[in-house]
Image (cartoon, rainbow, N blue to C red):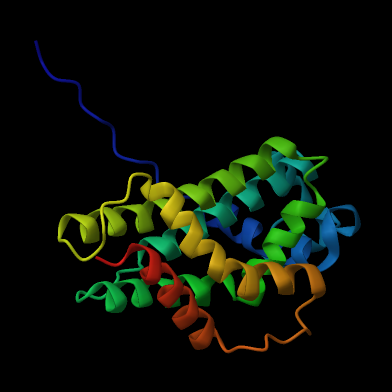
Length: 208
C-alpha cells in the first residue's frame, strides 16, 4: 500500500495579496462603513469586477484583511528569539521584542479596527484575538518551561498564568493605554523602563 502524496502548497495569488494590502490600509484609515471598493481596486491595479470575483464583496474582503493581519502578526512573533543567558537576560530579550511589537502604532490601529467592527464580524474578531494569544503566549510559555527545567526559575505550576502576568505588565502601558486614550498620549516611562520593571517584578516572584 503506497503512502499518500501530499500535494505542493498552492502559492499565494499576488493579485489577491495586493488587493488585501491596499484594503487593509483603507479599512484602518477609514473604517469599515466608509471604505469603498472602487478605490481599493484602482489602487491595486485591478478592475472592480476582478475584486468582486476574488472576494465576493466588502464583508468577505474585510474578513480576508483581518485574517491576513493575524497571519502577518504571527509571522512577526515567530521571528522573536530570546537571547541565551540567565533568566533576566532571556526574559528581558523576549519582553523587549513583545513591547516593541505591541507598541507599534499600526498594530494598535488594526486592533482598533477589529474592536470597532466586532459586533458585525464577531467570529472574525474572536479568531484574530485567539490567534494572537496563542502565538504570543505559546512562545513565552515554552521559554518559561525551559527556564524552570534549567533551574533558573522556581517550578511553575501554571506556566500559562505566569506568561499572562508578564505579558500583562507590558501590555497595559505600551498597548492598552494608548489604545484607549489615543496615540497622542505619551507614556511616562520609556519602553525600556516598562520592560525592566516588568521583568524585575516577575523575577521577584519566580526567580529560583
